[in-house]
Structures are given as C-alpha cells and as structure tokens.
Image (cartoon, rainbow, N blue to C red; front, side, top):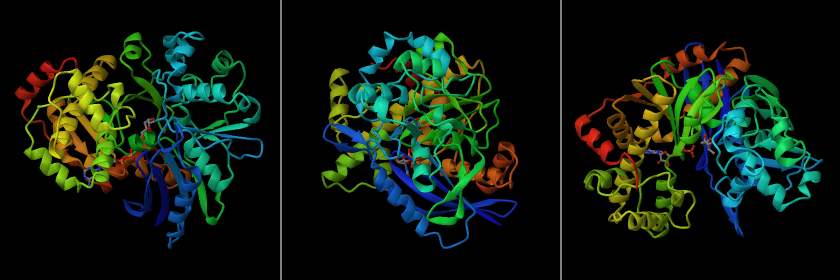
Length: 477
Ligand code: ADP
Ligand code: LRH
C-alpha cells in the first residue's frame, strides 16, 4: 500500500487529497479544503501567497498516516518574482488583474502576433505570463535588476515548502514564453520583447522526486505536472482517437490530446492554444468560460442575504423557461466585472433581451449559454484537428453539475462521461506513483483510473430541437 498527497489549487478553492494505491485500485480521501480568491489591494488583484502557504501547511498537519510524497498543481499563467535572497518582490498578481491588457497593443510593435503564436503555440491572451511580465517590468523598472528568479505558481508553492526552485514543463507551457519545439524558454523571444534574458528558473519534466517537504521530512516532494489541466487530462481514461477532454471548473478547458501543435492561421484566429501534457506532447484546447460567471453571481446573491445551494440552483433551473436569455460567455464584459449581475444586464440591454431576474433564470441563462458556446468550440476543434469525435470526458468540480453535463451531450450530440470530479488531484497522484516507481506510464495510470472510478454517462437527447437552437445562435450577438 502506497499513499501519496496531492495539493490541487484552483482559482476558487484548494484541496489536499490523499490517494491510496493498493497495487490494483486507488481510493481518494479529502483531507483539507479552503477557499481561494484573488485579493483586491488598491487597484490590483493579487494571490495571498502567505495565506496559501499557511493553508498548505494546515492541511499537512492533518495528515495522521504515513504518506510517501506530496505533489502540487495549480491554475495556469501566474508567477512569483524573487530577489537574490529568494524573497518575493511583491505578492503574485492574479491573472484576473487587467493591468496586462494594454500590453497586447505594445507587443504588436515588437512581433507579429501570428508569429508569436507559431513560436509558442499559445493563444495571444493578455492573462499570459509574457504579458504580465511586460506590465510588471513597465510598472517596476527596477525589477529588471532586482529580480533573480521567476517561478510559476505551483513551483513558487513548492519552493515555499521545500526550498527547491525550478519550473515544471506543463505549467511553463501556459506562459507564452516556451518554444513548443524545444520545450524550453525561448531566449530569442525574451531578447526581442524584453531586450534581456529573464531569470525564469529552468524547466524540468515531471514524475520525479526533487527533495523533502521541510517541516514534514518524512514526506518527499514530487514534481508532478504543475498545471491543473495537464493533471486532469492525464487522469481521464481517454481513447485519443474519438474523444475530447473537458476540465470543468472556474474555466472550461476543452480540447484534444495530439502529438504536434496546430499552429495554423485558422487555429490562431479562432483563439485556440497548444499547451503541454504530462508526457510532453500537446493539449490542443480552448480556454473557455467555466463556472466563473456563476461563481461571481453566487457571491452577489450571498452578499445580498439570499440562500443559495446547488439544490436551489438546480430546482430554479428546472422551473425557469428554456432559452429565454442567451449570452456570449466569452464577451469581455464577463472577465472581471465589479458586478456580474450588472454585466449580464448590460449584455441583455445591448442585445435587446430580457435580463434574468430569479436565481433559476440566471442559472438557466448561464447553463444554456455555455452549452451552446462549448458545442461551437467542439465543432471547430474537430475541423482544426481534422477528426470527428464521439465522446467527451469531463473532469473537475463541474462534472457534478448534471444539468450542464446533459446539455453538453445534447448540444454536441456526443456521449458525455462525467468524472472523476477530482481529476486534477488524481493526475497529480498518478505522477507521484510514477516518481515512486509504482506505475510506469500514463496508460497504466488511466487503466487504474478506469478500474477505480465510475463516471456518470449522459446520452444526447432532443437532437432536433438542439439543431435549431445552434442554428439560431450560430453567431452570438
Ligand atoms: P477550480 O478548481 O477551477 O476552482 P472546481 O473544479 O473546484 O474549480 O469546480 C468548481 C465548480 O464546480 C463550482 O463553481 C461549482 O459550480 C461546481 N460544483 C462544485 N460542487 C458541485 C456540486 N456538488 N454540484 C454541482 N456543481 C458543483
Ligand atoms: C484552469 C487554468 C486554465 C488556464 C487558467 C489560467 O484552472 O489552469 O487551464 O491556464 O487556469
């Protein structure tokens, strides 16, 4: 029996999951969970790094059984800048901060965006590390000298717990600073954009033990895929030919595992991205809107004293009229508005629709809108990858939302397998089992997942109606 510990941090919550492997199956147990949220200080959004480290340690204190190792994965693109004493120069900025947006225009004077896409494989998005660093160096020019090491978020947390400073490949591949061919930091690109090399700590491949957890010396620190989406994909029991993956949480990452990046002009214009998998190949995906809109609405409902539970949301959804209000979830209005309720009202006014008014109407509007949007994305993926698919494997907290899973099946006409919910944590644990010599490959890990977890299955329904709906919303207004 081997037990490993997986910390999986999303943009809405973090959790510590213990995974027991008995040689045949794995079982998981949640040890600790905490909320996570970008913190607004004056006009900037940051991650509260000291509070995160405190939560990580609080979870480890609860471990009252022998555990071999710990792995950490997080959301993508965010970083910590460290000085020569390896102290943070500032709290890490959150990608929800819009300070990097103006850098999109400035970049165009330095490099053709399509060239940048062909080089890194990444969608041109102002949340990417590249644009964040442009904004940070512009605001704090002294950091050019003072900054001696840059760590991606999971690696910053690993550093905080183990003193080991390096960057893992999959999380680095979200930065727009990695060359997809060499899988290393693109030094030519750094020179072109920053007129100097950046002190990004070196990139290492996962599935290895890299040290000990300082306050818990019996636990080894493992390097797992640092990116939650790469972890999730490695734990979904996918047949690569006919299936798509979806990691559904604050974001919806939907795509296909492929060998070579797709860097065509069509893929560029449609906003697709090529990021790294746990095996060093490509996750071709769309970083689409996930539950963020609903998470922000819930915060506003709770703040106004309303009682909100998943059951209340589901009941409200069932009672509300179908297809009354449809929004484009990718509209910039929804990226980080002061009020999500107001943002939806503004969108409805702009598109001459009636704004939702009850919880059920909002939930319906959100659920139907994202289902339509995902169906369009999936059609485009099949076109760009020149391959049709019949199944979608969904991991992440959103896999528990049965209404959305059913609508995704209806809108796409594909069979949806939902679960495991904790796909990222499980992928994190599988990587540790490889580092410990208990598993040999991703294939062995996926077989283990199939033996250990049983997904919910959703068969497409109402196909004729959905064809009409998709035709009606071919383009969002
Ligand atoms: P992230 O890791 O990106 O922060 P998660 O994967 O934890 O996000 O997913 C969070 C989302 O999953 C929540 O916003 C919520 O909408 C959905 N969710 C979580 N638990 C449930 C549940 N029991 N029923 C329905 N939806 C749920
Ligand atoms: C989802 C995610 C996604 C993006 C975003 C910033 O948690 O990792 O793949 O990179 O965070």
